[in-house]
Image (cartoon, rainbow, N blue to C red; front, side, top):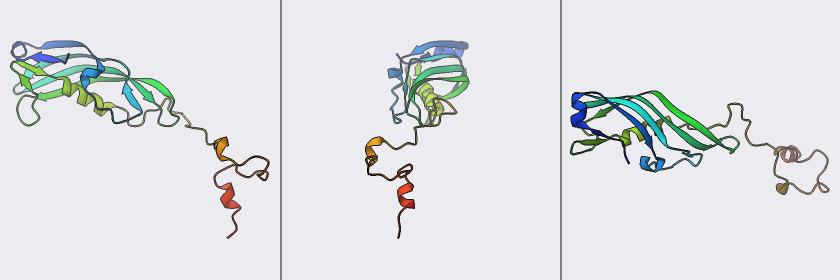
Length: 162
């Protein structure tokens, strides 16, 4: 169920809107393989109408299921927008879509959450990434390799005589 607000109620007084929204309701098109929703979006905000704009102020929070951009280990990250402020226009090309007296705020919540997603999620700020040792399958057999050879990707090039 989307986050919907009743405009006639809003013209009379400020409304407190709070609850949770399942991730599937956000209709997020996943473009980053390192990020996925790890839980529900929780929200708590006040809504008031100021002319042709709905002013939203409060907080949004969601848990993310991530893979580290350096080491690819899975981890969870809590994303919180606190304080969160949003202006929802009721007129113009960016206007919220109204269905009678009801306005769906879900696209505006989704947009702000997606803009706050980490671009390169890290399991730890000190993560050193994947080990630099080459996989054993790519190395020649130890019996055929001279001592100290193949320790780095550059060692074979260092021995090259042109």
